[in-house]
Image (cartoon, rainbow, N blue to C red; front, side, top):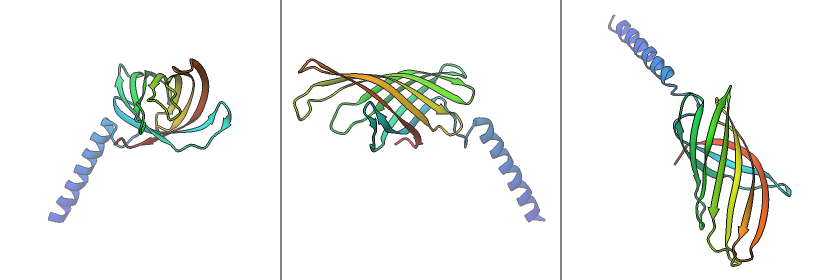
Length: 163
């Protein structure tokens, strides 16, 4: 008899926990307020296909309403200054479309160049899996030689637990 009450109580507790988790969206991938991280892997650049290691991108996201978000992000680059991104995102159906601007003021390179980068990017993210794609165009400016270097890149976004 005690075992029946225990099992019934455990089943009721489990049902209530699942109900609360479902209402809160816990256990489901979903784009929303808070911190989200992705591994960005560039697969194409302006010269064609490339193989590069992935880089961790961390965003802080603020929800303005159920379909509009503000995003601020950073890529910490070992031995260089951070790559900073800001922009907005819009949820349309099952996709999130983020338009971002990014800048990086590089430290002096080994060749003595002083590069400054400006990029415009688009993230397309599946709201259920948080996976997606990226493409962007940009321009780098060498403050030493006064030369511009335009670029294009595209690749993939894979969700990752934030450090």
